[in-house]
Image (cartoon, rainbow, N blue to C red; front, side, top):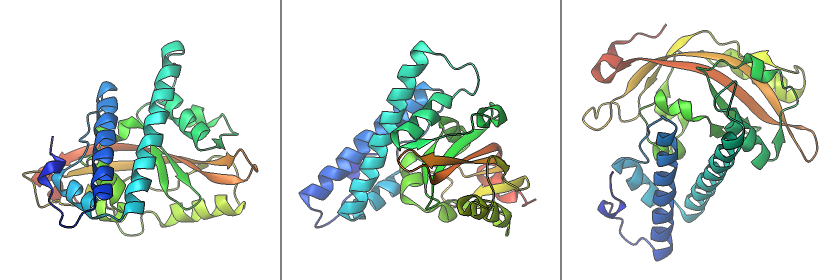
Length: 251
């Protein structure tokens, strides 16, 4: 693995450095948890560590809090699996624990009958910020965990223009109450390409993948019963890696 000690940042405070090391420890722990589930992923890249070192203290603290929460979810989900091995969707216990820990609830249990075993599940809050994704995502991505946490999604992936327009309309209708229940994401199958650091093929083997969104399902706050976020399902299938990925045309 890359080492944080290789990252030199002038004038970094002892508090800032301590947060960096705490984040790295948590990233490595989460990467090992993912590997244990058959989903290998890098904890970080040297470039991501360099960016981490320059973040303001509040962003580092937020990143650490998110990592701690994710690890808490994994520990709780794994404990449940020991006594109740999954009979349906393999990562259901982790999604359910994520909802529990964030104070959300799924009112429509029919959602689980819509999820295919090869799909990943993501949880978004009302600010459209992803707060959890299932481990199987890591089998489709070349990015490290830290890359995913410190970069905006639009700097990581490229899609055909207009691909998500209808999905945003669906999401808006759910949040406004105009639409209720489980709905189709309304997005055609398309190619997504990893574009962050794509030219550095020596250290980063970018991928092109086919992406097919499934359904979107509202989740609710346990405190007031109001819609608090969304569950989104998708099937992502890598089709090219490295130089070959550059030759894949958008469809």
